Image (cartoon, rainbow, N blue to C red; front, side):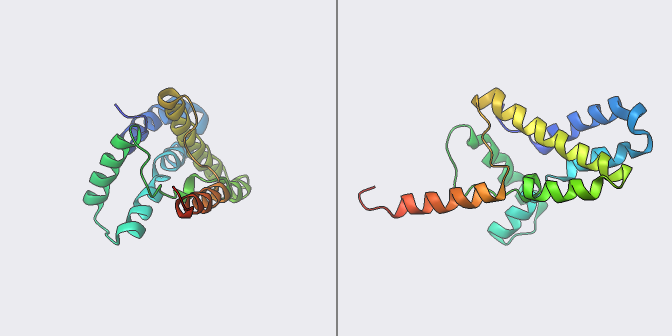
Length: 152
């Protein structure tokens, strides 16, 4: 068992949550579910950018291995999972308030992030993700400077 939510976990828990919220969501149930599951497309986009490979099968295999190792070692480069960041979610929230479908989708995305955060906390005792693009960039700059320091 890994300290990371895999897409199959997100499908399972998001389906349960969507069914539980069905009386409240009504026809927007699919929008909630899509937001909760499809937010992970950013992992696939990161894989494409990193390896210039569009194979879903190889991306899935790579990401499964990467997630299974994540608990044991700090792997570089850490993926930039853009759709999970505040800088993307905040503008989406402003758009979503005008639409019931948008609110449901945003709710699904936030549910997804809550699952990720819970899993991180459960296995690592801390939140082990950067949910801010600014934080990701800052971390990359700081780690590249640490690697260039003499005597390290």
